[in-house]
Image (cartoon, rainbow, N blue to C red; front, side, top):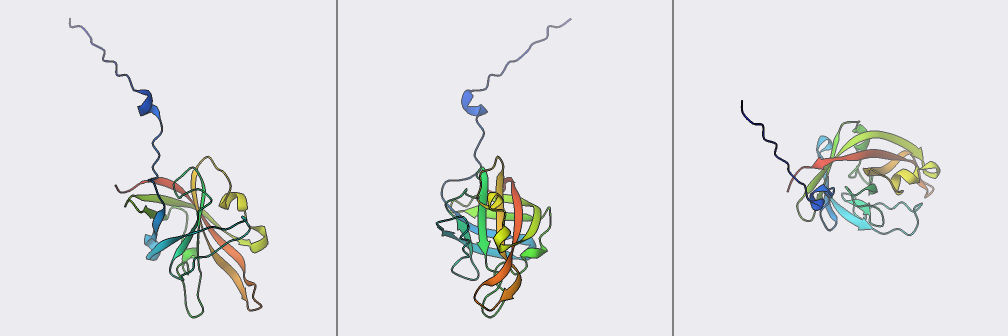
Length: 174
């Protein structure tokens, strides 16, 4: 009869720490493959959570920089225009996303993070779920927001917002 040997591998304390999938710096590009969207990410700084702010350019998206970065633990928020003075803008087809669809955020380092759509909702402007847009969370969430509903020419704009709620899946590139 042979003798059984047991090998014991000790993990260092450093190897037990969770790895943060988010690279240093800021997000650079938002891509939605299903919709053919590839947009530059502008960073915006709003003073209060109730101040939603779209990007300066119709084809860009805007990341709320006082909140979580896309991929960090917490709720990250990215805004985009539905339309412009003349034609559709970056999030014109955002309502076509469904649970399971993929959103990608690429950082300045070239690392891309993938998010999977969990659900979508349309909310009156005065009934937005701000805790899900800006609040703390235990998960790595990303919300995409754009205008929805009826456009009012009295200067108040659209009366609703469309929100796409996603969760980090995994890093997909270097």
